[in-house]
Structures are given as structure tokens and as C-alpha cells.
Image 1 (cartoon, rainbow, N blue to C red):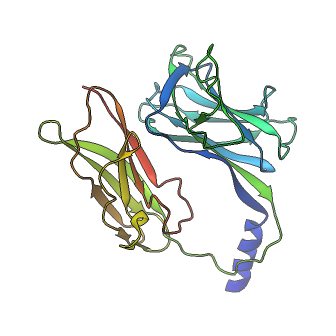
Image 2: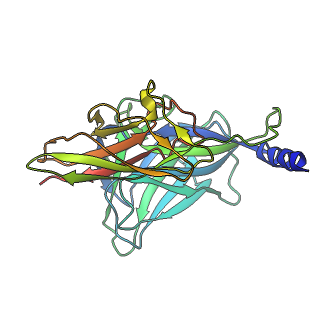
Image 3: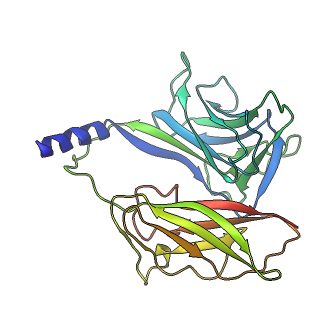
Length: 295
């Protein structure tokens, strides 16, 4: 009976296969602001049969009561075919904000190989002039689309890409059924913060949790099994000692002391298993960010 149940679960799993259509991380501290109702847009090439979810990296927080509105439209323009919403709040900041994408009734189906646009705006009737703080990567990591109008009225930097992710679903393809699910560790970086030391010195801290189904065992010969701290994308010291975390285990990791330039705002990050040396089912939760404000 156990083997039959596993086979049924596997059959359900292969009814659709997740497909990452777009995945661009934060690059250094490259960010800007736009009028919230104008929002930001990224074109991308469709590789899925339908949309599942999307997320966009939001920097500074927006006031509670507003909504981040997500739309997927044909490129270069057209009516929405998928939409979603995520709540704005004072504690929603310097993180990827995710929403499920729901198909618009009567809208045309996606076409693989065609270009579409992900647009993210801020809707807040109580703060109609509020801005949206976007992040991007200027190194052109995504070759099949571009960041659209990050600076309204100015020419587009065509090699920029918005810090965002889009997940889709493909119909089942022929493959062998797995009889049993595979146990894997799954590191989740819960938080990152800065502790001020003497004078201009400071240390970076992070809390890491294993939310997977198998113990995470770091290998001293694999630097990726550790935590890498960075300020504006520049590594802070070497990676930490290898992590070993039982299922459900939590640990706090600290960086070496640093003395960043405090005349400007910085973006601090902590990434666990940064080089993906240990296989995990989900790497989207392996990093966290926080601002280090100017003073």
C-alpha cells in the first residue's frame, strides 16, 4: 500500500512540472525609485505553459494599506493575462515580495517563445505619491529580455535586468515515476543584521535554519557549505566555517569585523551555501538582505 501511495503522489507531481522562467538576483546596491503608480517592468521570453507565481525585490518599505500589483502582459503592450497582489507594510523591505499569478478570465493563453512583460506597481489610495524602490542587475544576466523604463523620460539601459523571479508550469513530460520522495536539507536564512562595535567597527550577523528533511552537513573542502557575508556585493572576509545543521536546527553566524564607509547607505547580505555545493530543493530562501544606513 505504501508503494502505491508513493506512486499516486508521483503521478500527481508529474501532472505538471515547475519551470523557472526568469531569475535575477540583487546586484551590489544598484537601485532606484519610480512613482509607485508608474512602477517598473521587465520583458522576458515565455518558456512555460502557464504562470505560477512572481516576486520582485522591494527595497525601502512602503506604508501599510497599499498593494504591490503584479501584471503579466504581452510585449510590448496589451491587456493583462495574469495578475496578482501582495500587501505593502512597514516590515516588508529589502526582500523578494511574492504573489501567486492568477489567469485573467477570457485572456489568451501563453505562447512559448513569445515575449511578455512583468509589471510591478504600487497602489495606495492613502499615499498616492509614494514611490517604489526597485533593485536591478546591470551586468545583463538575462539575455532574453530587458528592464523597461527604469528612468522615465530617459533612454533605457538595455543591459539591465530587474531583480525579480517568475515561476511557471509545464504540462507533464514522459519520465520515470519516483517511488519515494528524496530527503534533502534546505537552508533558510531567517534574518541578517548589523551590530555596531567600537568606533567605526561593526560585525554582520545572520540566523540560519534547516527547514528540510535531512541534516545539512558542510564539507570543509567545499567553501559553498558555509555563509558568505557581503556589503554591496563585496565579500566581507572569507566564507565562514562549514555548517552542520540537523533537521529543524537553527544557528547564528557572525562575520569578521568591518569598518564600512558610513557616509552612504549600503546593502548587507548573507547567503548560505552560496556556491550550491550541497544540493537543496529550494535556493530562493538562502539569502537575506538589510540596509546599513548612512550616518
